[in-house]
Length: 508
Image (cartoon, rainbow, N blue to C red; front, side):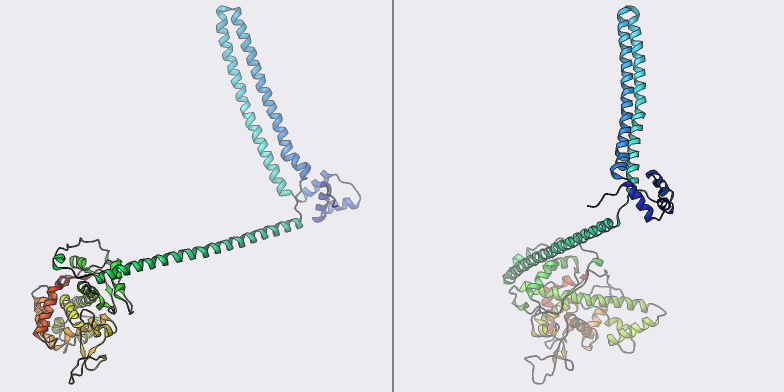
């Protein structure tokens, strides 16, 4: 068995570790040093002295302070009992005097009682500082001895290494366990959070599809029921900065998806007619199954909802250009950038000889009612082969470009229907056609005169000038006028995008 080293042996071991020559010399000369002498030499050489836990640490940290506190408490007890005894004796003497002298005994009794009470109070008050001093001395001595013993206690290196290694192993195992459980919970949580919303979304889509099918199969409303429909109350709109454009990708979307989207974004034509605002939703193509809608009113409304934002967006660009043209032409000096912009617009509107007045005539909006009526007539409300295969809304002809071959074309006819990559390109080409082709000079002249009189441009005032758009001439313009009136397309003349700045009618 390993022998337990004594306190003196520990001190000698310290002298060898720290190489204290004074103690080593004494040992070589075989002189016995007492434990106190060894402690004194080690302290003189700044060597930390260990405490003997079994004797000195326990004695100094616990035993001595307790005995000291006991003595002081006993002193306090003796002082208190002595004062109480004196008070009792004085009170007793006063009471006996009360019997001996009836006249003066009462007065002397109360006087002595008052004096004794005062002395007792002073004695008790004197004991309070002693109690406080005793408790404070006990706590301070215990803490000082405790921390000093920790600081000066010797710890073997092997035990220290084992302690550090054990602590490191415990920390490492805990870290691995926490990491494992965290990953497990995240994995389980991700499965739950992903699966539930997907199932909910599927259920919502199925419900929406059922509702859309009911709308498609719904019979047309009677005229009396349509007349009874009340105008919707105006809704609070978001600020223009909060409304962003929504461009739908070129996919084979279905009518059910389109109608569901309109419901999600609260796109309602009644609200558009009332508020004169439309959301910037730009479809790149018509749904392929648009013709499957049995309700003709629903089919027409769907077509208008798709085409209306495209027409309004092009008119907004024209108005911006027209305002800029007016600002530039009103200046005496123009910059190179402004001159470059003017040259670009002269080429775009096919104006010769840099005629600014002619450019001002051609650079103007197409009435929304006319654009919607012509789009409906030429594309069969978005269901024609040219509209579905080539995004050709307005049935423009071409003899040189790539187009779609008409099925019922005559032998001497070599034209094709011009195709476009997206619907908006078809609207832009239609706008350029009416604003540049010589066949529509009457349309532009009449529009310019309306603008000069500071009146609003309305489609019904200009339909008679588009007789050259189709081979049927006057019959074609009568059909356009009929479409505008039957579908109340004049309500959309002043409609603007929700994310655009309100523009007043331009005055020439």
